[in-house]
Amino acid sequence: MRIDCHVHVVGNGTGGTGCWYRPRGVTRQLAPHLLRTVGLPPSALSGDLDRLYAERLLAFVRESSIDAAVILAQDEPHDDHGKVIENTGSFYVPNDFVLRLAREHREFLPAISIHPARPDALEELERCLAAGAVMLKCLPNCQNIDWNNPRYTRFLERMAECGLLLLAHTGSERTLPVLDARLATPRVLTRALEIGVTCIAAHSGTGMMVLDPDYFDVFVEMTRRFPRLYGDNSALACFNFRARPGAIRRMVQPGLCERILHGSDVPVPVTAALLWAMGVVSWREWRDSAAVANPIERDARIKRAMGFGEDSFTRLAGLLRRV
Image (tube, rainbow, N blue to C red; front, side, top):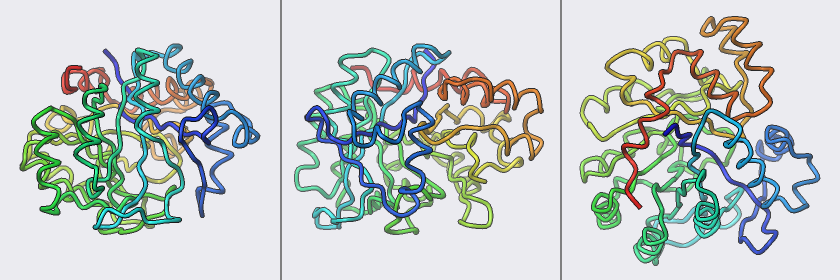
């Protein structure tokens, strides 16, 4: 089964979903472009966004070479005492929404989001496990989650016991407000890996050139120490200066390619323009991919042109917990 491990869900709460979308800073400027990626007009922000967006995602998966997409919930940032940090998040997607979408459509696999400092964190984890969660998604630097905090030991132990994967953002973040830039390093996953949780470092620790620190070398070093650590190639086909030719060459070579999973980061706009300018893909590969309207399929074609093999698309199927 070919799986896209990194697909975002957004909504504005229509239909009683509980979602909200309140773009801040750079996110406010990007909102129209994100909607355009999935073929929706800006007016969808005030319309039936939840239904329209989910329908577009489903159609993209069904009309692509991808068999299933992991759709991501998004919890709010919390402080170390488990209290919501008000007015810091840009969007919220409750676990129940992605769990419901996954029940209704076999093409969707649910990734829940639970801040481990929440007073009800363990109870919510058990509830979501029973409902079919296959992964937990977090942005440590945006949600204020340091997985090395000993207070989260029991939460991580339970994840390891049940085989729930941890997908954690690593490296640059320029779309959402960052609360603690120190938590962008893959080292934030050290304790989780030591406990036995299978972790996916989203973006493989890559940073935007010049603007942010790059942790790709840290990620590579950690894969040698921790056999349960994987990375994904999400956002490497975006015009964001995250991709570097040297890093991409290493990611597709034996010794590291076995630890890379396919991910798109939709609805972040996908293009091979920068990759062509860097000499990673050919002119024809760029132009051929640009003609593909479906962002899920366009990203998959670009990743293949970059040198990622079919194993990167199918590897996740063997890692997911059985539901």
